Image (cartoon, rainbow, N blue to C red):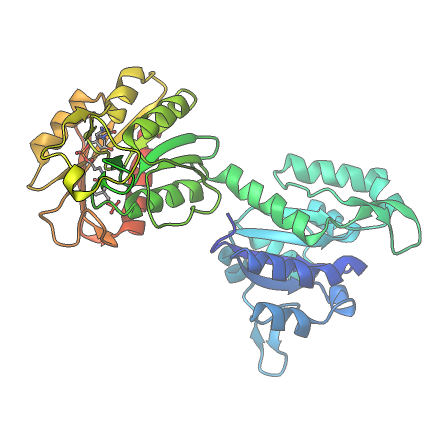
Length: 400
Ligand code: PMT
């Protein structure tokens, strides 16, 4: 959830400022871009050079770039840059200044100009933390929508033992991940998806299958996860590793995929079928490898269950159902008929007639038809970008 997030890290004058270096590192390790602002007193605990070196960006602690040239640092621009302004450590003095709207240093000026959410991780001695004034300030900030990352208990710099230590960098990073997750547009939504091909055994080594690589489904699972959804991906045999944070069930056959998908759909908010499920399986398969002279002249086929159609039969009013249609011609009529027949809210059409679209490619070209009559035609794009387009349309559908 921290991937590509822009985090403005405000460091104030506490001994816990040394942890800011580790915190900046941890946030970057998780994919965030970090810029640091320090109060003048914070620079006495840890040098701006340390944080500038770690983050690869200049550290700001003053209104002026260069006192002789009269250049000044634009606190408004910095305030607008961040997706989040994290003040860690936040001293009792800074918390009080935040409540009062004081603007007596550069960090407080950015605080007043920032439009992004502000989060504070307090650090102070236990008596200062328990003081009515501090507790009142914390409550006021929370009422204004500033979440507080609670300090931890333990030995303090004063020699006392109690609550006041700034939360550990890993704990703060975990906290921020959960927070970003809770703010994401699909937060709280449970999605079940199918992806990849299915392999229908003929004998111990041969199968009926198709050319699906799973790339489209895996890209979509990643995009949904990044939008905050809780994603359960049921995948046929593919050479792709599990998308980060996605629960993956690996299956081989259509019957296995059908069983897993129907069970998971019961508690899902959204069902998406990107899998290229084999429509037929061999009526009987051998558990050993058949030798050339043992192979039957013809393989009798048995129809596989249609997972998406069965989802459509089970669908409740509060569930959203998205299907895919793979055609080899323009396919619009066929896609629209699947939209109706399988009781879908949306169908994504891709055609092997379009160069770079469909099976195995890193790109796709889709048209989307919705139950409400809306349609959307997209250019050829990477499967990651196609996934973003589909997630956006799902978000719009959920708002209707
Ligand atoms: O995996 P890639 O290489 O990235 O390729 C992506 C893709 C081309 C496989 C994907 O974009 C795609 O189009 N998936 C659907 C392929 C397909 O089987 O289309 P269909 O028109 O035959 O089926 C219609 C819908 O019913 C699909 O959502 C399919 O998942 C579903 N279905 C079909 C048959 C079946 N037995 N069960 C199903 O759930």
